[in-house]
Image (cartoon, rainbow, N blue to C red; front, side, top):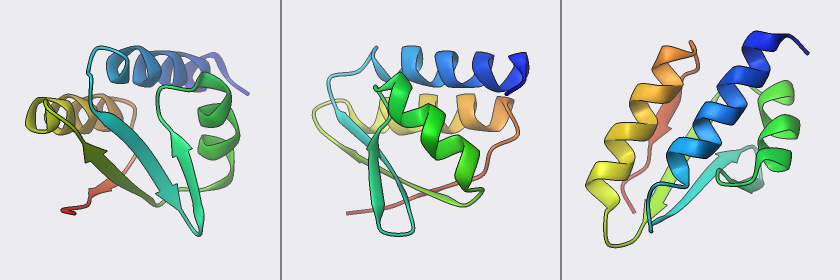
Length: 82
């Protein structure tokens, strides 16, 4: 794994941990807590199409921040409206 991927995973997790909302990344039938670095390591290696689910008191701010950090690292996400 490259240092760029490591940096992306750390920044995604750190960004997610700033929010009280639950932030979950879905690919195929798997759901990964974005606040979990270990979960991100396995997820970002195996997929390129992600759905982002955010639930909680700061949902709008969390979705915006997560979209920005994913885009910064060249990762595509679909923000799911639940």
